[in-house]
Amino acid sequence: MWIYEKKLEVPVRVGKRDLQMAKYLITQYGGPDGELSAALRYLNQRYSMPNERAKALLTDIGTEEMGHLEVIATMVYKLVKGASPQEMREAGLGSQYADHDHALFYMDASGNPWTAAYIQAKGDPIADLAEDIAAEEKARATYQWLINLTDDPDLKETLKFLREREVVHSQRFREALYLVEEHYKNPKKYY
Image (tube, rainbow, N blue to C red; front, side, top):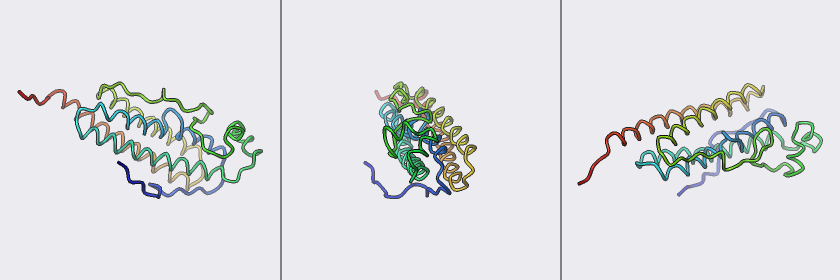
């Protein structure tokens, strides 16, 4: 189904090690509005869509969100690379280090582990697409707040790219919602 291209969707550069920023950024890795939750939500919801266009859209965006997960992982990895246990502890990542060393773990910025409860799937295409629009807008807001938390211009550029992709996804979900609503208003009848 997928062809894996061994490069990131966007280059990831960081100007300096910044463990505090890594701690904040991890929320987009395993938080409720993060990339893992989005990817799994969309790839799951596609099965209850009433037309092929909506199914294809959810597949495309869910796949892109998996790519964004890689971008976030790369940023976090680069931000903590080479940090000592003491530096991890001082940045509030001592428990992360104790459980995972420098390995990535699906959690939010407060250290709460990812849970399947973050994934919404009602089975009603209109409800699911409305949820998806909200999810993209929450992710967009989170990316803006992350941009506000860093002074690293390289990191800001990558975060701006991800923020803009959330805007595009929200717009695409709005289009899909319109198509699905039209589908229910004007169903094709076969006799």
